[in-house]
Image (cartoon, rainbow over all chains, first blue to last red; front, side, top):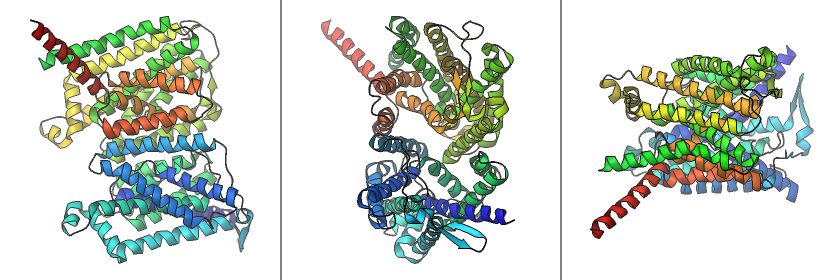
Length: 286
Length: 331
């Protein structure tokens, strides 16, 4: 029983990170309607940046967080400006293939620049644990979970309590109508993309003390985020948060009860079932 | 007039396809012959992908699953039971048809990104099965095919026999695509891809049309999978059934021109040698060939989303018009 509880908490902790990375994609895909297959690669870039800041300047990932996030925001803007803005009106297929190409470029760029080696960022928090009764939890994982959920909730309030957030939701509902109401469409798209990339970057730097950075470190997250967003009901931020937690739990339980090899297959199966029986997502409307 | 010129262009492409078989005979060594075999094989695989996704415009990023089914069916039958890969190839095709019926039956009604993601999901689930069924597939250790040359074993000493087989495979798929373009099924498929509702209103049974071509595409991919396994003589699920392999199918088709019978061939004829030579001669920069491929994909999509084949056709047309004009002036 204790072990099952440990499996549950462990799944929940991973789920928090999935939620944060997916909330970024929920903005880009669910709200702005842009397909980004290179989403995971930005997570990988943030991991590398955190790693190098620690390796060169001895700044741990939390100390270098602000510079890291600023860099991710700039990268997000550049990606939007030079790639996404050109295909705003193109079909999803074109956007998909384009960002698939981008993901190849970023992965192989990382391979060329930093080799395929696993880069571990071992800070004090990597090995320290929090003991809560019978549970032994890695401090870094707990911190990552708390920050991830806080950031996701903050995004929800940003979307629902600020003018800019309302503008983003308006664009999501009807771009043309929003434009007629005086909302600058391109600026809103750009901002949505930048925030989305910054959030997945935050997820990346939070897991740097836990997982190694390598060129394809972000690849599994790219697909996973899409699955979470679809399960969560596309444009729903709470849906993405719950979806992320759910995937984390499924992964953890499938790994414990069936076998580690089934971790991914389990959520892919859930995804197909959702597509067949409830295509609007588990938390979507209708 | 235009039609006649287009036909001339197509006959140029036919000539390239047919005559390409001469190339491996003139290549100086096994290294270049190896690239020729891979080029034919990928031209055939990419054309198989094109048969559904290219004409219908719905991208499958899960075709590595059928590649894997074809490769594993023949290899398991051959290694464990001594059954000839030629028979294994047919068995693999049947399994792939079955898988395509199940996958297609559940996902073909999905649109856009949802369909794409579902193909990825199915491929990942099948990959997991290949990894987990250790008794059958040896899991992630992979399966070696013992070297025992002979026609019945589909194992040969030189590269040339395989060049001929893979070329024949490529020709088979291209001929099927050309025939599809002229058939009712092909017209319906293109119509469904352009506007499903409109096509249905005109009496096209879109589910049936999509399912038939999806199954055809899967079976052809599976045949390529068997050839792939017999040529490399080692299969392993992590790379063979990965998203990365699935992307290759698309890359060559996009580069040449999706939804055209010769597009994937043109794409593969250019990109497979280029990337293999990059990998061969600049191997000290690992990742360079992937970087170049990704860049090419981005550039083609941003500036030439129809691929380079229409561009080539336009170029040939311009040349011919100029010749014609000159002739007229001469008279």
